[in-house]
Length: 112
Length: 112
Image: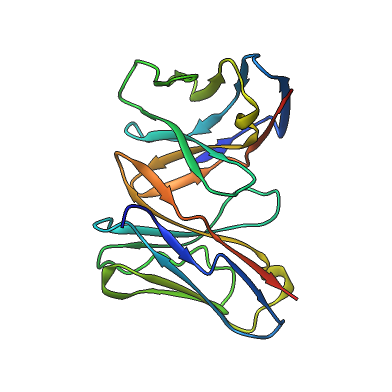
């Protein structure tokens, strides 16, 4: 069975610091996608970044980047120069063959 | 439409009443999911529609829950004889593999 594990239930950092959220997954698939979603208190799920498994290059979106280690089945999210607006729940998700598996989420708090 | 639209955004109902939650997905997206998110929790898969195929209902928690999708577009999630444990945010998402999931803003259901 495919699983996604986020081992950090909650994290907090000071504004402007860099923070890394961890995500590991388990699958026997070779072709899949990985996502990080952000859910602020407004509860809207917002796509932060996506990674195709066949791509070796790590995805980046402005202050957000991932460290994708396919062999280790690891997909961590790095947020640089963190901002107060980054405070939210962050969910890692694995997608393959129209099946989406979610991690339990990490609550990230950015302190002023 | 440009995004996934859900209605109502909030619903308060008395225990034992039936409720209907509506999702209007992105035009042209053939795959549609319903998820449930209890307070502070991750996403719980409920049901998945893909084109004209039979829906994957494996996540529905009881036979009080049902969903339909008319004309391959709008979907309605129905909960009969609501219970207090049904209180949650119900999220709808449509998906293409490239863009990932696009979520609606959810319906917050409160059963009193």
